[in-house]
Length: 335
Image 1 (cartoon, rainbow, N blue to C red):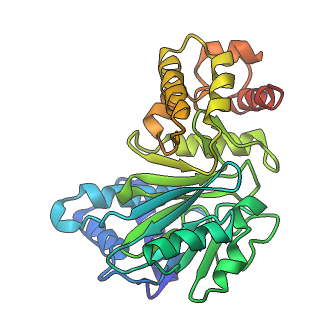
Image 2: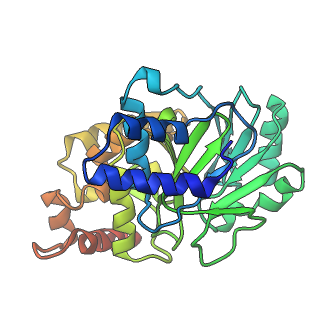
């Protein structure tokens, strides 16, 4: 449990400065380890709010990565979380995260309250947290009904243009959310909506991206700008290849058709499409997906360097990656 989140945030900022100036000693690593490790699992979801705009998801992530690589005597591995994935509404996926040690259980977005109640009852779990990625109704529609069950804390993005129903705590890029014995780094994922966020669990090698990134696609740009959305995707692309990406919809077959229209000569994409067709013929989900596979085949993560994609969407040599992304997103909208 983080007793003084603002003191922790300030310490993380100081560490980032040390890191940037290459003046990090063993003592600094030890201090960060103490800041980022919990003495015991808790059913309370603590959060860290930066005291300076210099603390971002990338700088917080660097601190985690350095902590993990400093030595086994300096860190303890987080116990695996149980992740339950189930269909909700017409094409949404609902997610429950469960920490067996503490009993904490979190819903990642809430398309439909009844679906979550059924899954909770089936497993005998008590909901303690809701982690919202953005304000759209098919991600927050069950918030208030589930909160009425009692003992539920709702955490959501602080920069959305519309309110998150029942939100208790607001978080943004670079904040750290503690859930049981694990920690999630909040990452900026704006573009689909203005304040969209993602929850990255580095010790679990998984990220919940809402509608920012899809298997072989990305979300529609309802509120953001091409530059904002591209920056979000660039940030996600920097994560390790073995990161499991949990997105919120089963759109992969449709996304695959568009991806093939803009990069048909990509052998990695062709292979992915064959696997996807096989899975969907058996009514199997294509989510989660590995980020490393997305980097090889998702056109929205490749538009800055794939000459084939750029040629097929009419991007010029002078177009910035963000401008090329905007053209790609428009092509998908009209596909």
